[in-house]
Length: 85
Length: 85
Image (cartoon, rainbow over all chains, first blue to last red; front, side, top):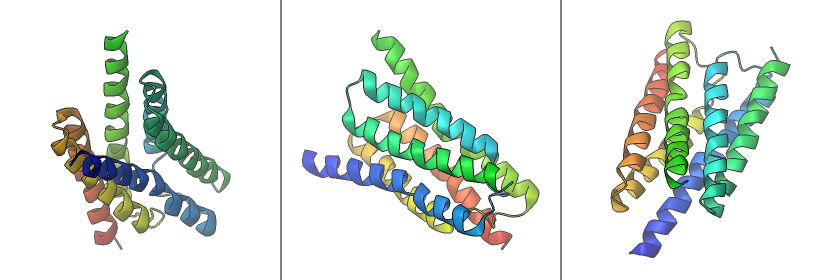
């Protein structure tokens, strides 16, 4: 049972991390992110960074790994949003 | 030290949960979510739902609470995206 729950957590983490890849690709292709909220990106990136620090203090590599990928993807969306403003 | 780390986690959770409120409000006001990726929303909602189930099995109320709010907000964005298509 415990292994199943761990796999569930890893799957959830992978999905909520990789979910931002299609958004980054869409923004890159359409050269537009007008409808994407800057306040969401700023708030979300701040929260994800804190999760990264949280993972460091808890010595939880999974939390650090998932959140560092999420942070890179969201900073990428943020960069593209301003580049195509 | 431990209390500090817990507060850090709660803050991170609050930010990555409430981050989607400005996106929902922006979509509601602008009546447009063309630039928001449907694949991101579907993948993210699936992942957040799995985190909710994970929290249930781990009996972790904080994980369940944060992810149920995140799920409601993202389903809201998803609904508005198709309503204004």
